[in-house]
Image (cartoon, rainbow, N blue to C red; front, side, top):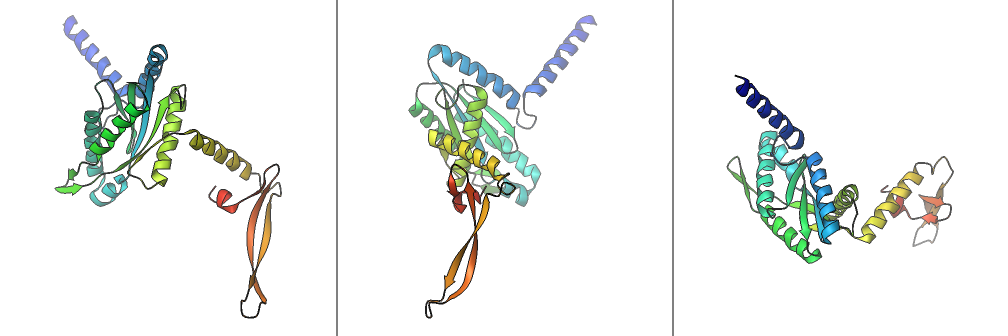
Length: 248
C-alpha cells in the first residue's frame, strides 16, 4: 500500500509539472519552458562558438477558419500545425506554442545564417501543405520573423523581441513569408517607439501646428479653398512628415 501511494504521488507530481511547462491544446512546450530551453541553448552556443536561431511564426488564415468553421476546428488546425512544425524541424530543435495561432521555433547550434535559412525554407514549405478540416481542404500560410544569436540579441528576451518585430514586417510585406531581423529594422523600431512616446506630449507642448495649403481653380487662377494640414514641429528634429507620425 505504501508503494502504491508513492507511485500515485509521483505520477501526480509529474502530471502537474507537465501542465506547468506544456501547452494543454498541443502538448508542445509553452513559453515558460521555451525560455528555459532558449537560455540553455545560448549558454551552450557561447561556449561552442555556434549560433542559435529563433523564429516567431503566426498563422495568416487562422481567423478565417475560426469564423467559418468555429473554434473547435480552429483548435484542430492548431494541433495539426503543431505536428507539422514538429516534423519539419530537427530532432534537437524546439517548437513551442505561445498562444492563439503563434508558435516559436528554436534552432540549436546553427552553423551560419545560410543553414538557418535552409531550416526556415523547410518549415515554410511544410506549412503550405493543405489541411483537411470538416471534410474541406484548407491552404494555410504563415508569416515569420527570424533572429540569430548573437547578432540579433545576446539574451532570450532580445532574441524573442527582435524575432517578433521581424514577423510583423513579414505581415506588412504581404504575409506568407519570413523575414530576417536586421539592424535597419531594429533602428526603425527604436525610432518609432521614441516618436510614439514624444507624440503623447506633442499637443500639450504646442508642437502640432496647422499649415494651410491653397486650392486654386485652374481656369481662373483664383484661390477657391484651403486644405488644413497638421504638421509636427519637433524641437531638434524639425517638421516630422505626416506619413511618419499619423500612423503612430
